[in-house]
Each structure stands twice: as structure tokens, then as C-alpha cells.
Image (cartoon, one colour):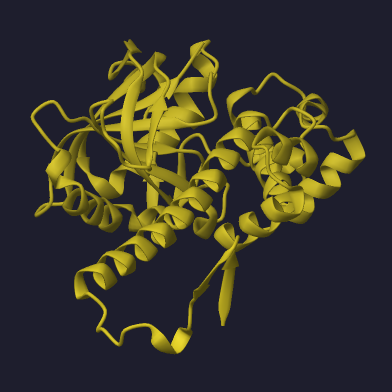
Length: 319
């Protein structure tokens, strides 16, 4: 084979390339580069899905569609739809529909004076359509769901043998204060699954990122779902650790600060569900405050791995 270059003809024969063994360092660098590229592509996909989930949850009462969400992230709707399904196991439409119905159920908890019809309208449903979709998802009507919201006790969904017992409004109020939080810059990993597995995932997270920890590190989890409403396998939680803004990892983000109600919790990890349900079901609807974002924060002050006990702030953004 010859390549002609102007008036010169330079022979370039495949079989004349010197039979020299590959430099092992070069091969190793190439392999590392390929591995990095694969990890980078995976992280980019995951970050895209994480950010799209955040966008969907914060705009559930808007007119969301596959077109509008894919346009938000400058990606083909067909490509985005495929990536979302591969990463979450749900289609984008199934996810949006489920989140709307679950969030509407939370609204019924937090806004006892708001009519079921108005709550359905907030999420784009007519009265009859909302009732039908809600019943199909929760196996009960919106009205019956509202009547069944527990204010004294309830079974723990991921530990059916246990019963959660609630305190009075006054007892919760004694352990709650209002605080202003700054924005937090964090390393995070998103966990989708049963909240009962969070403890195990926390320990894996801490071991993985221990090099970033110091005496000023804040550990927090951002939870998006009420496990008394959302199926255990579909609950979303971000496990987070504050870090300097010079951190070059891909899995970093800002959590916005603002006004939060803060419940001071000290006890066993298994009792966190009982406390949060009491705050949401008993105290918050009577407090006069409105939840300002569609997520809460649990901020850890001390973790005792051996005894499975924690000291923490249970935080809800309010306006």
C-alpha cells in the first residue's frame, strides 16, 4: 500500500511495521483512560437522571412532559427516555404519574382544610379523574385516604410487627425550633429503595469518602418520600457529606438553605420513622407553617454504630 504526497511517493506497508512489543506503560495508560471514560459516561448518565428527578419533583404541579423535561437538559427525548428507564426501572411517564399521586397524598396530610378536589386540580386532574387515578394507585379513594390518616398510632410499613405511637402537638413543639440554614455544598450518592437499608448504605458511604471528612464535616440525608405513602422499593434518599467547593468529584451538588423547622432527636435509628410521622401527621398541620420544598433533611450530630443510635436534627423546610 502506498500513500501519495504531492510529487513524493512514500511507501507505507503494513507488513513493514517493526515487530516491536507494545510498551506496557502505554497499554496500561490506555486501559486506565478507557475505564475512566466508561465511569465518566456512567456518572454523566446518573447525574442527568438525578437532576431530572429533582426537576420533576419540584415541578409536579406544572405542566410536565417528556418534551419539556428533555428540553430542560438539552437532550433528545428518545435518548433521555431510554436512559431514564435504564437507570430507574420506570418510564418517565410512570414516574411522573406516581410522584404526582404520592405528593397529592402528602398534601392531604399537611393541608387538612384544603378540599380533595382542589388538591387534585393542583396536579392537573379533574375531580373524577383524580379519584380514579388515586384509587388505582393506593387502592382507596382520596376521601377515604384522608379520613384514615393516623394521628395517634400506625404500623411501621417496613417493620409490620412494630407500631409507631405519636406524641401530642405540645410535646412535639417542645423539641422543635426554627433555624436558618446556609446553602450546603455536598458529595452525595442517591439511594432508591427501602429506607430500612439506609443505615447499611451510610456505612458504605462513610468508608468510601472518609478521606474528605474533617471536624467541620456535616452528614445529612435528603429524603423525598413519605414511606407511609410511597412503596418501600421506590423511596428516594440522597446520602450527603459537606465538602469544600474545590472538590473535583462528579457527584457534588448544592442543597439550598433557608428557614427550617428542626426537631432534636436522640435515640435508636429504628425510631426515626415514628418521630417524623408524628411531626408530619400531628404537629405540622396544626403549626401554621407550610412545607416550602418537596424534601426534608436529617442532619447527623453523632452516630454510634455499635448501638445503632444517633443524635440528629430532623429538618423540614418551611415558609
